[in-house]
Length: 238
Ligand SMILES: C[S@@+](CC[C@H](N)C(=O)[O-])C[C@H]1O[C@@H](n2cnc3c(N)ncnc32)[C@H](O)[C@@H]1O
Image 1 (spheres, rainbow, N blue to C red):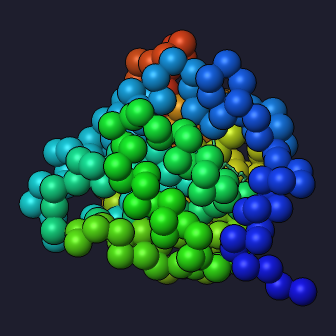
Image 2 (cartoon, rainbow, N blue to C red; image 1 turned 135 degrees about the horizontal axis):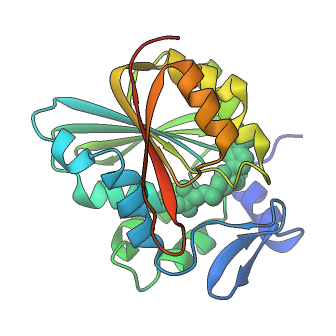
């Protein structure tokens, strides 16, 4: 039997929620990890992902810019990009295996500068199909290409070339599927010279795999309790 998206998210909601609120942040019981860092999730998004990929500079003078995020979660990084994007066209491709219910998206962003945009996201959310690729014209200049399924299956099925990667799965220890060598192979396949990547994880296995796949790495100063975060530029297919 197939279920509508609404039925699916409601079943998460009422039967077996796999997340809880813990110390003011959303916490995944499935992965035993937080969706965002504790102190200031928006500052983390800005520092790690937007500045780590130098997006404000690179969005200038580009007709179309393509971002890929692994782990859409609360939509924080997506909404943060939407709020600041000034170019003609942004394609934001993202994966999510366990979509959160719309009411949780609303709660997460309540009283944040992203609240207005999160209302718009929640309204669209309830119209989505439960699986596969959904293409949503979110604003006149931003298209959301949301893959509801595993990151690996989504990556394997796309031929897009991305300008920037946001790696935002739960930590590699808790969720190795999001950081596997197969994922890194796909990142390289869908990158071109100059494609950038940013993540909060500095796991040594991740650094090794990214280097082997053709990325040049830079450790940046961290934020919100993390000593360091990672930024990278794709140079060539290894
Ligand atoms: C750290 S949280 C997301 C953070 C998100 N970017 C945000 O700002 O809210 C990681 C997300 O990855 C999703 N996820 C976990 N494993 C996945 C997989 N194999 N494929 C796609 N998404 C996955 C989780 O459901 C969760 O929403």
